[in-house]
Length: 220
Image (tube, rainbow, N blue to C red):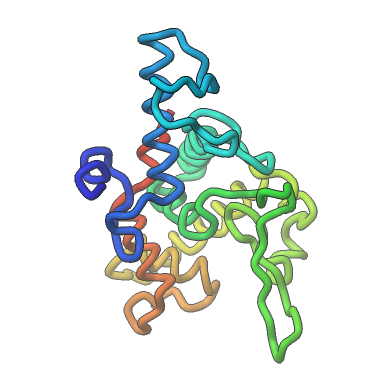
């Protein structure tokens, strides 16, 4: 498994080293499906005894729509690359933020918007939503929160605009690592230097993802 991940440029760090996660699983079976269709003209749901292991209906093929109503990884990657080019944000920063925040996922399996609740004294103070995990309390006067929950492209656009502001701030302040400073600022909005002044696992996770670029498996 380590060899397979290395050969295909898949994420193989930390707790995922040598393990078959969702990305690796999808990559393995999307390759098998494509090869079998070309050579045999067989149905991908045939379940024949001489075929590779059957694929569950919930397994994601790189270029297909995903469960819960999510667009394909390829569609999200292509859109982020397009929008980053349009606004002047390095695409690897935009892609790494989206992967770090949600693994490029807008909706849960049940179709509800992916969210993360933030608590203060046991009470929900705010919630982060969708692919870019946009905080409803921080951005409710700037962006349409309902649209952030339901429109994945709008969610991405808002997140990339926020990231662009922090990217420009990192350059202006002469941060030693622009990518990491951008994410620290994005994740906290105020502590652009968190990556070098604190030992926060979120910054470490972003840096691993940024360097390994797991989205390369889904470039259109």
